[in-house]
Length: 327
Ligand SMILES: [Zn+2]
Image (cartoon, rainbow, N blue to C red; front, side):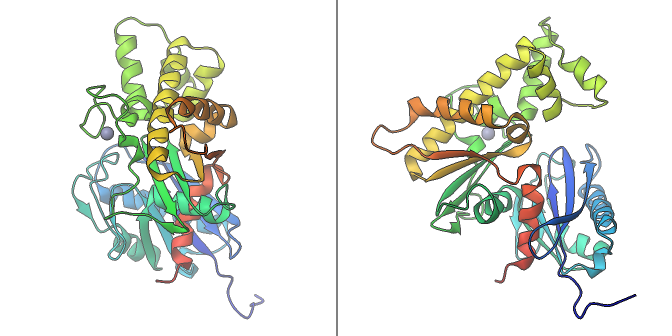
């Protein structure tokens, strides 16, 4: 086999979501050269989730014509509280059995035979949009990732803002005092109205009370066991009244919460991504923009609002950026 002088600097990126694990391999110009997707386990332990992640990464590397041990490294975007120094992930409540801490980085490094760096899923996706996607023209952006939950990432004057490690929880901006119970345990958060999990719970409760909807039929037809983004998308397309009402409510909640965040930060641009955000696309970005308007502080210049430029792969591409970063 002919050998190049240096092996290509391929990097891996894994986006660990509440619904799916997306593993990609990128080249030095951030082009995706291999990918694999697996459902996130809904039961078991963090070790089971890590095993699926390693399997997805190995599939992606073989699709790229290489092996995981030959990558220059693998970055991971994970939910929960991430200790970037040790690769430990704690309290990832959307994942099975993950209330405590788990050494995700070291476990994956063992399985994959390469170095692994772990970052917060939403922050890495925001960084990817900032550096390579819709956020490129700006110095400061707010990423809003509308999916299983609603996550937020902040870049201020070119630097990610992490607070003490927990910044960016835009899904838990209060949009209704004393409102609906959120998966986080509090009441009235944006995510209680807009998170895919909360929306599914609400839809099932309404159907339990006799309200008609095609959501379950669509889910079965698609061979899914939950109301994924594509199930919601299909329900909207066929004019399902319950789905439309819940999505409208979600859009209002996002508009209200994002406007509040902007009143505080006066940021240049908002980028809407996540499973539902990407699925619904520009028409819903416009709807969210319209719902923000009445809540924006009158003296402020309205921000630009964009759909995520990297689409579904932004989380993986952002995770891979963790490997190239010097620190
Ligand atoms: Zn909450």
